[in-house]
Length: 72
Image 1 (cartoon, rainbow, N blue to C red):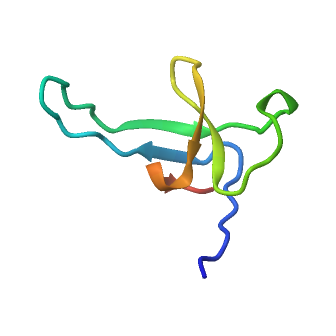
Image 2 (image 1 turned 135 degrees about the vertical axis):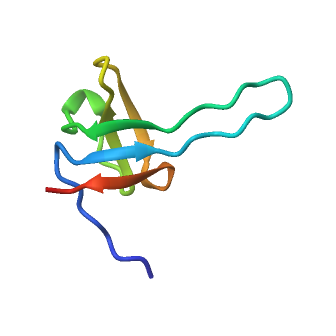
Protein backbone atom coordinates (compact mmCIF):
# COMPACT_ATOMS: atom_id res chain seq x y z
CA UNK A 1 0.00 0.00 0.00
CA UNK A 2 1.26 3.44 -0.90
CA UNK A 3 1.76 5.90 1.96
CA UNK A 4 -0.01 9.23 1.68
CA UNK A 5 2.34 12.13 1.12
CA UNK A 6 1.10 15.53 2.23
CA UNK A 7 2.17 18.36 -0.02
CA UNK A 8 2.17 21.79 1.53
CA UNK A 9 0.94 24.92 -0.24
CA UNK A 10 3.89 26.48 -2.05
CA UNK A 11 5.65 23.19 -2.78
CA UNK A 12 7.48 23.49 -6.10
CA UNK A 13 6.74 20.75 -8.64
CA UNK A 14 7.52 19.87 -12.24
CA UNK A 15 4.85 18.43 -14.53
CA UNK A 16 5.91 15.54 -16.76
CA UNK A 17 6.45 16.42 -20.41
CA UNK A 18 4.67 14.64 -23.24
CA UNK A 19 6.49 13.23 -26.29
CA UNK A 20 5.36 14.07 -29.82
CA UNK A 21 2.70 11.68 -31.11
CA UNK A 22 1.77 11.76 -34.79
CA UNK A 23 0.87 15.32 -35.79
CA UNK A 24 0.78 16.54 -32.17
CA UNK A 25 3.92 18.38 -31.01
CA UNK A 26 5.87 17.49 -27.87
CA UNK A 27 5.10 19.34 -24.63
CA UNK A 28 8.09 20.36 -22.50
CA UNK A 29 8.05 19.79 -18.72
CA UNK A 30 6.68 22.81 -16.87
CA UNK A 31 7.29 23.95 -13.30
CA UNK A 32 4.50 25.11 -10.98
CA UNK A 33 3.60 25.28 -7.29
CA UNK A 34 0.94 23.58 -5.17
CA UNK A 35 -1.89 26.04 -4.47
CA UNK A 36 -4.38 26.03 -1.61
CA UNK A 37 -7.48 23.87 -2.02
CA UNK A 38 -10.53 26.13 -1.74
CA UNK A 39 -14.27 25.57 -1.46
CA UNK A 40 -14.58 26.44 -5.16
CA UNK A 41 -12.31 23.45 -5.91
CA UNK A 42 -14.97 21.09 -4.60
CA UNK A 43 -14.54 18.29 -2.05
CA UNK A 44 -11.02 17.10 -1.22
CA UNK A 45 -10.00 14.12 -3.32
CA UNK A 46 -7.05 11.94 -2.29
CA UNK A 47 -4.12 12.17 -4.69
CA UNK A 48 -5.39 15.32 -6.43
CA UNK A 49 -3.86 18.79 -5.99
CA UNK A 50 -4.57 22.32 -7.20
CA UNK A 51 -1.50 23.54 -9.12
CA UNK A 52 -0.68 27.19 -9.86
CA UNK A 53 1.41 28.10 -12.90
CA UNK A 54 3.69 31.14 -13.30
CA UNK A 55 1.12 32.92 -15.51
CA UNK A 56 -1.52 32.63 -12.75
CA UNK A 57 -3.44 29.72 -14.24
CA UNK A 58 -4.68 26.95 -11.95
CA UNK A 59 -5.40 23.30 -12.67
CA UNK A 60 -6.43 20.24 -10.66
CA UNK A 61 -3.83 17.52 -11.34
CA UNK A 62 -3.29 14.01 -9.97
CA UNK A 63 0.02 13.44 -8.18
CA UNK A 64 1.17 10.83 -10.71
CA UNK A 65 1.50 13.59 -13.37
CA UNK A 66 4.24 15.56 -11.58
CA UNK A 67 7.33 15.23 -9.41
CA UNK A 68 8.27 17.27 -6.34
CA UNK A 69 11.25 19.60 -6.81
CA UNK A 70 11.29 21.36 -3.42
CA UNK A 71 9.05 20.61 -0.42
CA UNK A 72 10.23 23.20 2.07
